[in-house]
Every structure is written in C-alpha cells, then in structure tokens.
Length: 183
Image 1 (cartoon, rainbow, N blue to C red):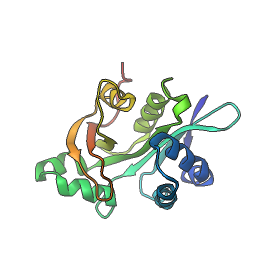
Image 2: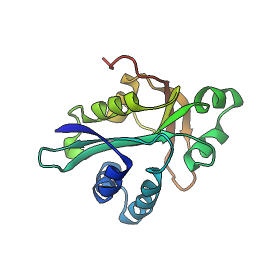
Image 3: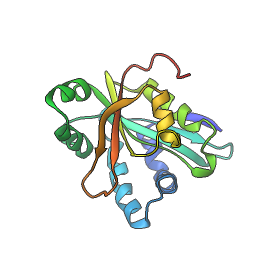
C-alpha cells in the first residue's frame, strides 16, 4: 500500500472509486451515495482543497481523505456555526480546515491506514484549527474515535443532529499545524 497526495483532478478522475469506498465504510444506501457523488464533485473546487489516497500495489483505492478551508456559505460550516457560541465560533471557525471525509475500506481497516491518511492530510492543511464530524460511538470500541483522540482532537459539540440525518454526531477539533506524530 502506498499513500499519495491527490490533486482535485486526481480525486475527480477516481470519483466512482471514492464513492464506493465511502459507501462501504459508512454503510450507506445507493440512493444516498448518488447525492454524495454530486457533493464530492463540487468539493474539489473549494479553496484550500487537500486530498490523500491509499492505493494498493495494483492501483485499487483502499482509502482516502480530503478537506478544505471551512467558510460561511458552506452547508456543514453553517450548521456547525449556528450551534456554537460566539466565543467557540471565534476559536474554531475563524481560520479552519475542515476534514470533510476520511475513509478506509472495511477489509483494510485496523492496519494504520486511517492514521497515515489523517496525518498526511493534516500536515498539508491550511489554517489554525481543524474540525471534523463523526457519528457518536463508544470511544473505547470505535476505531475512528480512538484515532481522533490519538491525534489530539477534543470535543467541540456533542450529540449534534445535522438536518436530514437521524444519527447523533460529535464535532471534534484540534489546533494546527500538526507538529508531532501521534504516539
């Protein structure tokens, strides 16, 4: 497996693979994936876009991650902004890189690929802070939660509900730059 940085064009060329990995990792239905395809295709044009991919030796996509500068007028940013206090907005959203997606195919999980992807993505990120959202889960058993905590992410919002999704999410953040590799 090799980790490679991706340009917006790289991700756009592999959009079918990206959506397939996303669907496998999140367990989403096909109709939801079609909607996500459209969103992802527009994300590559956002300011500060950065992406990484984990490729197998034969070029198959095992995982990916991407993000960009978070700004007013972006759906996720505006949802989170409206839930934060004025002080928290100032702290977290003034100069923020949003980790939009970070996924590894289920058969490839548990081998450090997510950590490598997140480390590389945060090393390339522009901004003073970074935020992401993840479904609420048992922090002791969830690989994603253990990964984010290992990288120093702290709670910004808990039990947050995005419109159109019945699940509860946590919004987690940390300062940038990523200075030390996580232990």
